[in-house]
Image (cartoon, helix red, strand yellow):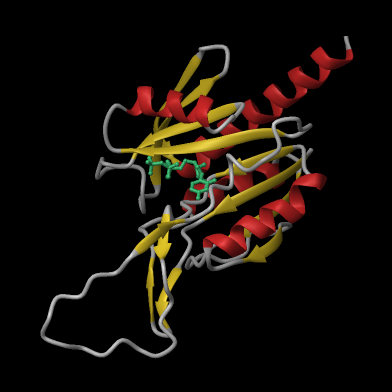
Length: 217
Ligand code: CTP
């Protein structure tokens, strides 16, 4: 199967030397890319700026801003069977990018932000690839993730609690809940991201396989 995976944060420039970003390390997305290769799949990895090396066997596309990630996903979905949106795409970007470095002053400084384009909701509803969204939550994990599953027209959502200090964001470990459109939920308890990734790849490939078989019957 052909996996298209996004990973890491995006950077939204404020001026030539500053940007808005988030704490995503890219570890979960990279682990999924590695696990998919290990399982014999083809992988295109669209990555925001992270401090990780390119996983072996992966075709890599490096991006920085949410707009670049948006375009890269658009360009590659036609050739994928499973899209895994594990990137922590910025929700807002500065309404204006300053041409020169903003100089320090004594007064307070306000930045106006505008929403970025949502990659998941902009995907065509009528598509042949499986869409996996991620839900990074700090409260009401299950309910919020279910909302994203439906509102973002995903086939599967992987939810993780990013408020915890022992797993999730920046950590080498994670614990996730996988939500399906059927209402079913599969929990994967705390484990290294590598182990979680192997399980996720199996689940995604199975759902995709089942869907294909159902369509053929
Ligand atoms: N996502 C996206 N485009 C964006 C922002 C997010 O496609 N501009 C995707 C992420 O890659 C992830 C999913 O949407 O798969 C959910 O991201 P998350 O940050 O958990 O939720 P948001 O939609 O940003 O909502 P909120 O921050 O309010 O929880």
